[in-house]
Image (cartoon, rainbow, N blue to C red; front, top):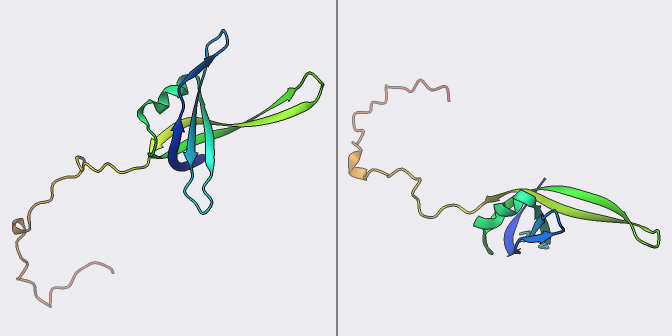
Length: 125
């Protein structure tokens, strides 16, 4: 599944427990009639995927829904959901134009003045 929107917040990587479990949170604001603020968790090595992103960028995040069951000390069963991100892509176009080939000036093209009405295209449409 995927979610798209503007980065609202990127938290610092936090480490938990003796095993060094790492988690980093990202909030994306969707762009729809009723915008939603979606919290996405990145865990372990996926935390580093957020290093090159900043607030305000338009992104697409690939996500998995996770659910777990927990029984509290009183014996009541509780259920929790989380959204885990595993890939993030920038949706903004590069404005520098470095990847665009240069366009030759108009003078580089010769005019086509030797066209005859009898010459028909052999294209089927």
